[in-house]
Amino acid sequence: MKLQPIRSYLSHWLNQVDEHSIHSPFFFDFYKNVIKKSRKAPTHSQIEALRSSLVSNNTEVATEDLGAGSHINPNGKKSIADIAKNSLSPEGISQLYQHIIRYNDSKYIVELGTSMGLNTLYLAEKKDAQVYTFEGSKALANIALTHFELFEKQNIQIIEGNIDSTLAEFLQNPKKINFALLDANHRYEPTMRYFNLLVRRFNDKSILVVDDIHWSEEMEKAWKELYQHKLVYGSIDLFRCGVLFFDPALNKQHFVLSL
Ligand SMILES: C[S@@+](CC[C@H](N)C(=O)[O-])C[C@H]1O[C@@H](n2cnc3c(N)ncnc32)[C@H](O)[C@@H]1O
Image (cartoon, rainbow, N blue to C red):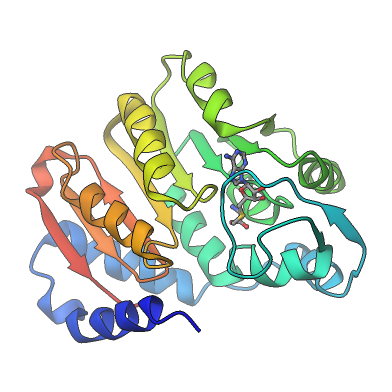
């Protein structure tokens, strides 16, 4: 067992504060109306029924090694069940993202790392938003596409291929991104590189979520640099993921909170 996530968890637990310690009106409101409310959201029974069927599907799919790393099975084939159990955002986290995109009324959304598209389905529930999701595994992209068709989603576009080459090309479009999720290659260098590309397309109200910020030493290092970055004006460490804000009015505040 890796010690690093345990150390990070203890440190998070020791440093976390509750709403009584949040003096900033913006962060107090965000905590109460986005983070806490997302915990009480009703289950999305159709997407969760799909998740249940995937969790018991032992069909194997070929998964390319895109340098993303995995503590579970770094190479070769994986069963759909394994991917559904180990690689997807759990329901509560997808509900959190849904609440964030409603909060800042996101219309233009980017998700790096589609996998089988369940989280994408949650994001695409916001009907007036267009979701662009990136996946490098052909097999997973095909599974995700069948799910998007099953749910008759017209507002999702999947961009297949290695994000190392697809993201820069996609960002030729100068449109501002309201919400982005970094959930693909969980290493220091690509995380920083994708951030530096995306940040040019953010405005003051954009929100970026970085998943698995305490997953490894590399991600820990990336997270520290990200929340201290000169263009980041506020941040929340939720342990599982980190939320970054870009509004200069927020005055560089950082909070460690529990979900
Ligand atoms: C953790 S999963 C994504 C989970 C999904 N966002 C969710 O919330 O359920 C990460 C995905 O990113 C993909 N990925 C990793 N590195 C990539 C890269 N460099 N280019 C494209 N896709 C990549 C993997 O194939 C994998 O399907």
